[in-house]
Image (tube, rainbow, N blue to C red):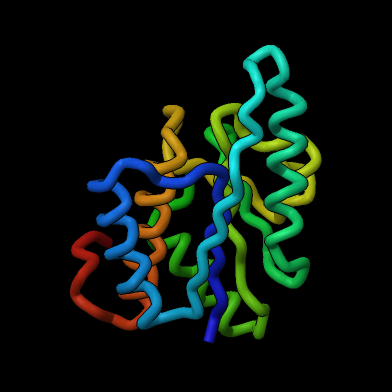
Length: 158
């Protein structure tokens, strides 16, 4: 079974978003080995944004297994369709790759070193999203991709 890890900086404090995210996480666990990792934000002033990114990246990298494809979420990343995400998950399964870790940065984004290490950079939107919203959108899209691969009726699009 494909392993999917979503690693993010900062806890989801908004209860409605947290419940919605947890709902999709529970649904997704029926299709893949799904895990989440949350690391604490660096809590440094904006003037030290670079240092904050480096600290958060180090914390994320300690929690993400090297064997997993690292997919960094960044507004400068590629824009995949849901079908492309489903195809990516299908390729992992077909070719026996262990899985993927989708990494969501904190308020200042992801460190350059972590971005360079990523197999791909994925943009959920051209707009900047709070990490809580990004995590919800990503988890829902992973669930939708899983239902596409199973031929289930959740996804109505092409």
